Image (cartoon, rainbow, N blue to C red; front, side, top):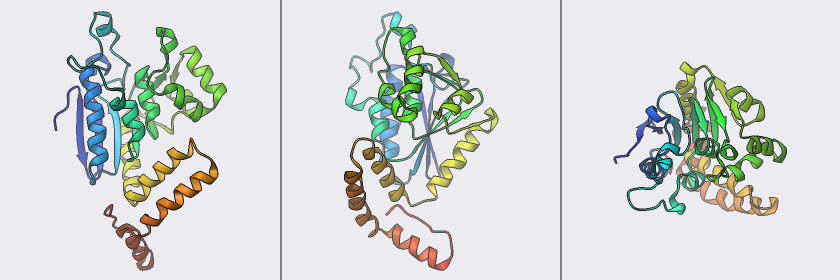
Length: 260
């Protein structure tokens, strides 16, 4: 499968998706939007993939929509076809069952910040930055930021981040709870991959079901979530992986999960 303005690599249950316009700090192009949605769907559909890492090439993660192209009259689109919102990356990213780790290698602004926040876990380089700069551009966080920020850090802190449009350093974002971990730049991908490997070592069906239940829990009552979790539990307990987990526990060995 070929992608434009994006690299896709798979190695030992981990798919790494790299935004690849380093000369433009990975500013979003129409082809990149289409490629990103297709890459996320491909990774989610691949039974061999258990964790996804999203990062950027060069010194930036994603500088947002390509405003220079927009100012020149080039709209963000794929050829002559406008982006289908149902398949837009933020929607696809939200609905992916596989865990997604953002390896924040540099600045993320606007759309790039929303993409980073849409991931499940964020590991940042000391050079990483997050900037919800939408109010400085005369627009709103159109890619999930208004939904994500209050849920991640609460209303008051989200309001300050969104209303000021301030660029946050990696350590400021860590203090706010927007980043899980900050590491030296040279260690970023090693740390992100180590975390991905730890997650990938668990039963993939259970990890994916846990993510689905957490996502549902954001919108439903406690009682409803417990009910949905019970419905997820029954097929999991009939899976090969559950039997393998029991056998490995009794044999005092590391389980070998197959995702079945």
